[in-house]
Length: 394
Ligand code: RFL
Ligand code: PHB
Image 1: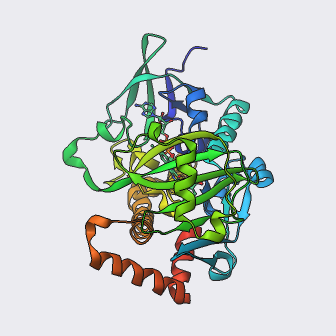
Image 2: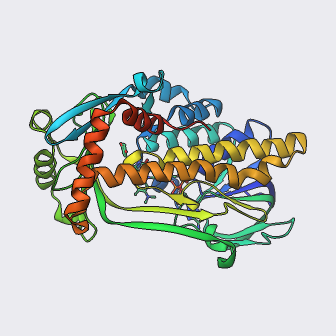
Image 3: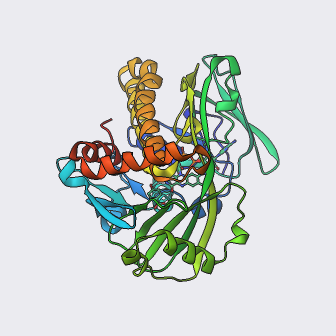
């Protein structure tokens, strides 16, 4: 199929942000093209986030891709925190006046979005290499790219950078027009996916002197576990036995006894980082999702922030095309960043209280213990965690 020479909204990156935006725009009669660097198989095989806030789940429904999520996703009303060898349940629903989260993998969200784009004949150009952005400060921005060895150009009214942390969009903004804020943590998360029933009915965030661990899930028969690990660790050094032994040693005994071990389907290490680029707009280029900000996964906020950015941006673009109203576009960066910084704070806080930081010394260890004791004894502190975990309002 010949690629179009122009479109209204040119979206760089076919991850959840880019696909969701193109889907929401299409349903309002606004055409877009998505340029994705990797093959579709590659994009669909990435294992990432697992928890959707109510706002993100609602946005997927608005985009017409909520049916399988509503059938197969698991609604969770609480989480558990393991401290000092004991489990403590936080009743999210009771603490937030009835709000819950949806456990449904990002892999499934992406598959549903691709299926919906295909069903609507949406244009997603995969294996688009060496994307370069042009004319961002003019009224006629464009992107050029290599497809099957030939260089092509697509013009647009707007370019949306949904190409993740390592993408080309943020790097196309002159350095003196961006402020970058970054905190790199001295550890990563080693994740394991296995077709075994989860150890608990809800997610368990476990603090332990040897390091943090997380018991999560994708379905009643598929579990996702994570271990805090040193940054220089290699996946090859972690056979499944070592993973399961280390996990069980970090969990309360009653929970460790319920861990079903089995062969891993996937194992990977992700570094932990907090990062924000301001502003999220340069001329006709708008940034959304991981292209503009990264959170450590502890608060389960990465994918959810991508969704809230897309909520603000899709509304703004629809106002522009439908009503000739540019207020949403003008205020996009400010609105999105206000929510981003609150999620950055929450993710940083969850990471700080639950992980081991031996290099910070004994005072920091006592501060962490005091934080956790306060959390587990104070309904006000629990309400604050719950309010952020289920997601702040858009
Ligand atoms: P994505 O998902 O990174 O998608 C960006 C897409 O852009 C493509 N791309 C390009 N396309 C064209 N030209 C270029 N030059 C391009 N450069 C990149 C990429 O191939 C990709 O398809 O960003 P998006 O859509 O903003 O979505 C954000 C979420 O994916 C992200 O916030 C979360 O997955 C973060 N995250 C996690 N969040 C959680 O809440 N829980 C987790 O357990 C969790 N695990 C993870 C993660 C992110 C990871 N990354 C980014 C390395 C594990 C990993 C490994
Ligand atoms: C996941 O299931 O991948 C997951 C869940 C909760 C988090 C992070 C990751 O906080």
